[in-house]
Length: 139
Image 1: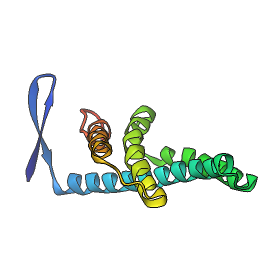
Image 2 (image 1 turned 135 degrees about the vertical axis):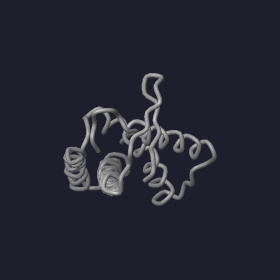
Image 3 (image 1 turned 90 degrees about the vertical axis):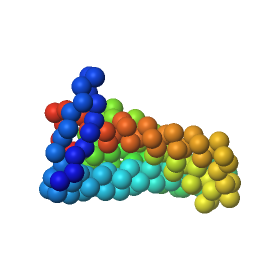
Image 4 (image 1 turned 180 degrees about the vertical axis):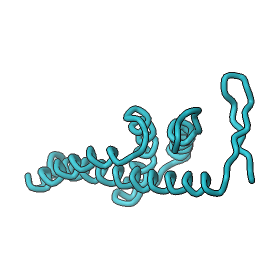
């Protein structure tokens, strides 16, 4: 068995990580990453459709479809297993990375060094905010 070390209020505690706990944790992480990705795709995609309508003179129907997609974005985070504030704070970091990838994919603007550094810092924040083990909370 492996041991997971974490610091809590200046005390060092060891927590047993069994194969069952590890499998459950990996399922939680995998599920949450899929939901973060789906929410990001819906938010950026919906926002982009509204952008096309208002900024690029596309049809109102494109804007309305964007509004529907944005509504669906609001539904997806409710399937996450955590508190509202943590989900949305962590999603902010995921959104940063996905927005950079969207610009690169659909607009041909590759992230520069500062984009990459900022996105990396944001993902570190996601890992700490959403995935760091907390006493009394079960993944």
